[in-house]
Length: 253
Image 1 (cartoon, rainbow, N blue to C red):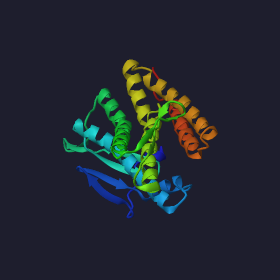
Image 2 (image 1 turned 45 degrees about the vertical axis):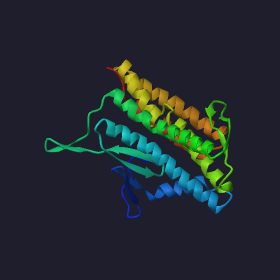
Image 3 (image 1 turned 90 degrees about the vertical axis):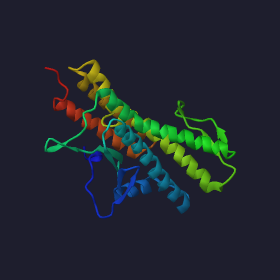
Image 4 (image 1 turned 60 degrees about the horizontal axis):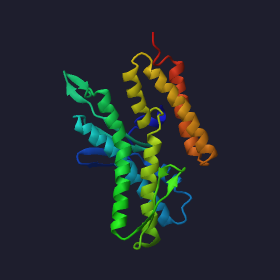
């Protein structure tokens, strides 16, 4: 699907590396971050929001990249208009190029590493906030997703806004990615588990799970969160999985 394909390089890409992992930031990443922050009350709030999105999504993808490295697989990170991708790098082999062959359990670990890197980062933000004398107020999103409110005695409104943005994006983005919807991390985990337990029909079952969950999240995003982005994103993902089913993917013979 075009939303999760590697975007072609442009001369406006930002390029750098972290711990030997190449990172490329497509210019449309900044456009989407800007649109998400368009309701900010000031330019400063908007800038802190954009920086927070960049930091949190990068940490998420670094979780995937370091997990791949653990199994000998190199990778590169691409931040683009629908979030981020960690793309395995090919290695020279037998006169050609190939990727490391990973087991299903290794793939599951790699998929979970992204969201949990974000959760760990959120925990570090909370720990630093507490060490600085901040007040942590227990709070939950939708009644079950933990999302503490932090009030810092220093830094004023700007720092408090930045910290809350870091927490919101790290936690919410992690939970969104754990949804069993292809090709999100949760969808990958569901596919690997079901294809191991049911090699004949597991893939097809995972696609039906993706269709139903994607449609439900799209509806909830539009009706309860008033988020057109979530509705469109998960609606497209559900439709993509349905198309795969119609094309015969995972059909046992």
